Amino acid sequence: MPLNKLNNLFGKSPFGPVQDHMKLAHQAAERLGDFFDAVLANNWADAQQHQQAISKLEKEADRIKKSLRLSLPNSLFLPVPRTDLLELLRMQDRIANRAEDVAGLMIGRQMKIPAEIAEKIRDFVTKVIATSKQAHTAIEELDELLETGFNGPEASFVEKLIEELDSLEQHTDTCQVEVRTALFAIEQDIPPVDAMFLYQVVGMIGEIADGAQKVGSRLEIVIAR
Image 1 (cartoon, rainbow, N blue to C red):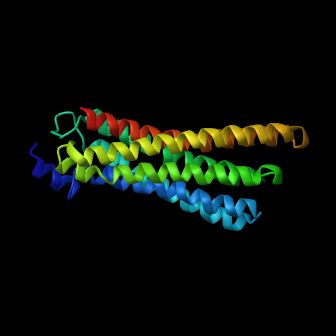
Image 2 (tube, rainbow, N blue to C red):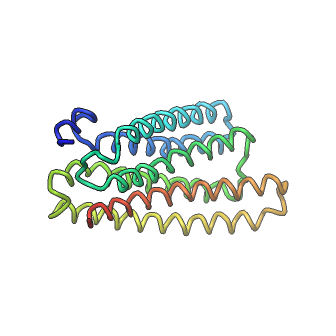
Image 3 (cartoon, one colour):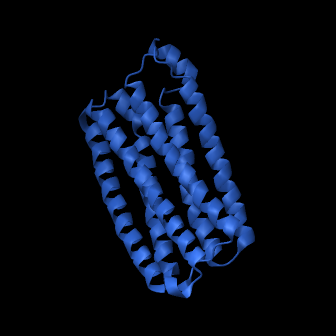
């Protein structure tokens, strides 16, 4: 299918829906910052509002994902492999899904964060949001990459963004270890079930950063082809 007809399907750019999806995924992750502020303040009414907002963003991202999948038959001409675009979408989707999972689980169980780990987990969430933001910034360059044929200074610029994304994700790994270590030090003082779910939440928060890094890795593959 000629590119102009492809543009008619998706608007200005065939990558537009991918960029829209990443924007929503990042907004869902970003909202976790406000959500944790409310949880740490023990303000469950406020926390629930943020949880509902995250869920709404995830559902909107899901709608774009399904629409894009249906609009990308195998026969459709694309400037990059269809499989790369779908894999990119899957990684982005993981960010939104995990943000929704974290907020949903914590609201459902009214999970309180022990004061001993509150500062560390807030710092962890902040750094995870930064990785999502960096992935979003890189995906916003898709239009420019398309116009430059995925080569030249623009490709180098995006590769630099991806390097920074990798570095940010490594920082989140360090934070995750610190939170787990701090939680281990106090787990005898809290109900075992609460400790179990706290470990689960910490793991899911880390998966948001993992998803953001994989968005960058898949974009790197697209540039390299």
